[in-house]
Image (cartoon, rainbow, N blue to C red):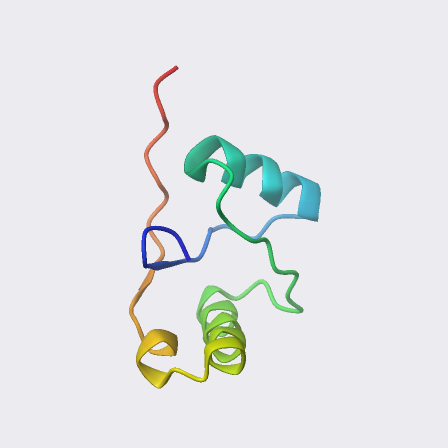
Length: 76
C-alpha cells in the first residue's frame, strides 16, 4: 500500500533486495516487499489482495483497485 493504494511493481524482480531498492527509489521507506511464487502480474495482484484481506479483514480495502503502472522517477 502506498498513499492508500495497492501498488504492484512490474516486472517481477529476481531478489527481495532488488525489489527493495526499486521501492526505496520510487516510494521512499513506507512500503513492504512480499515474495510470491508467481511472475504473472494478475496472479501476483490476486495473491497480494488475499494477503491484504487476511491482515485487515476489510473486503473494501482488499478489493481496491491496484496500480500496475510504473511510478515516475523521482528527481534528485
